View 1 (cartoon, rainbow, N blue to C red):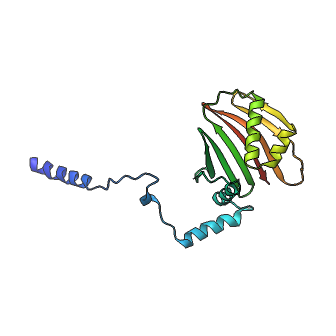
View 2: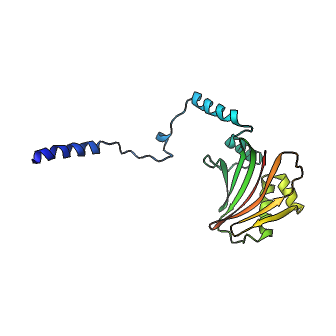
View 3: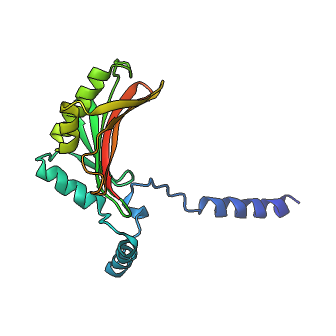
Length: 193
């Protein structure tokens, strides 16, 4: 009887130990499936055929940052954004789109103590990023005082800016200030429709 149980147990142990127990993380090279030029071209062409605008976020954003002489950034493909470290803070930057072509600049302030209701501080932060990232219309409207607070809550505050040409199909999202845990974010963005 012991022999009858002994062999199946040994067989089971041997089969379990021979299992491939190799573990890999998502960033391990072995987990990335290599694509052929044909696969890459097929995917790009089908996406581009459906797009009205250029959706090469990485290329467009990198080129934009190089024009601005910003060379120290990290590309995050999962976000389709470049991260520009600025001390303990980070600027998120993105350019491109498929059905809308947009520009986004968002400053994430780590451990910021300013209240969302401190309009002077937040407008100054928005002006600084508008100047640094050459978002000229935002810069001009802020300097001319052509902004207005439209929403103010515990976690988000919005400021609209005037649109100087309603016919040009360029939409300005305004200035958004958000509370994100201990951090705060100030974001300006625009897009072509």
